[in-house]
Image (tube, rainbow over all chains, first blue to last red; front, side, top):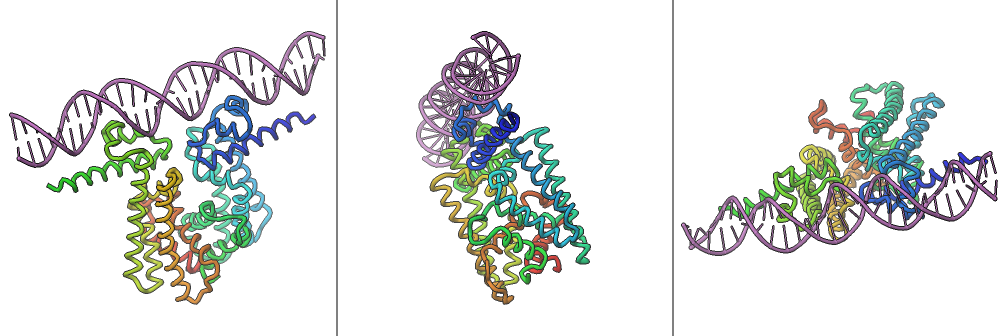
Length: 194
Length: 194
DNA sequence: AATTCTACCTAACGCCCGTTAGATTTTAGC
DNA sequence: GCTAAAATCTAACGGGCGTTAGGTAGAATT
């Protein structure tokens, strides 16, 4: 029983491995045969699970965006206090990176490898994701009585600190993820005084 | 006359065009023939100016790192006041991006396309570049009496805001480069209060 | 036990890529 | 103008890529 579930788990395992290989080498450099080798299959065999290499990338990125969207949606719904929510958002983003390094890097480095409709779908989810962030930051602004001038720019500066960690941060290093999240929060809200 | 100079100018023009094409499509997706078309030449003809596609990328990235290094070296030498210097660093980084969008994006997205010694050389110059930043931030810390705890982490958060602009910032938009630089400085040093 | 479907495999096709060899045009110096 | 070097071009090669056609072993269903 649970044929369906078993099958989905198998597919997910393949997508996970694929994400690792694609992330490590980059979408263009990683060949279908490379991914096949990592999964112990043949290149041709993989095509049972997706129609094209680009669809494979889409499945990975689209699924990850769904995960991110669900995360911030839940936080927005559950947390009322703007400060608490902003903290939670930052922490969520950092944790999401730590638990999905390959997917996180992929969506930053290789989102452009999608084309046409697939690109639009993923890009649209990114916009909706940013929408949650904007709401949250806007609420924090009002709470603190800060003028919401250049709200979008400040949002990008915050997102910058959260996303750039893919370039340098080691989750296993001396700085734990929650501590990093708190540092980002402090720097953004209070500067070096925090 | 100025044969040498003329030749170098021609080469530089080709490298500039190549940087644009490589940046737009990504190093792997852009073919030598694409670059050739953009320069009005043949693929084979380009090989007069470099030995391999990877060497082409190296020439572009290495040259840009030299440019960046010279910039911060000069600032470090000329400016004594740590606050002024930190401001200048941020402004320089933003301006460098605005005036070299293709090169800036390339060095972020495709530095990994270099291999072996070429990769090491570029990476080494990036380390030296960060060294100037670290010195500058450290001096600012001491000036302000901030504990230099997690200096390197804070440096990465600052660099994050400076570099992530490649993902969203339009130099021709309503926010002028110096104003953006000032916002980064304020957010980093004083938070939203700034 | 026979059949059908799932989950792969082997083999190969056609395309485009980076690169090279060798010919050819364009430029510079005498 | 002649010559030599510089700056290209045409043509092609080998290789790896994404992808497909068609086959097959094993599991599930009847």
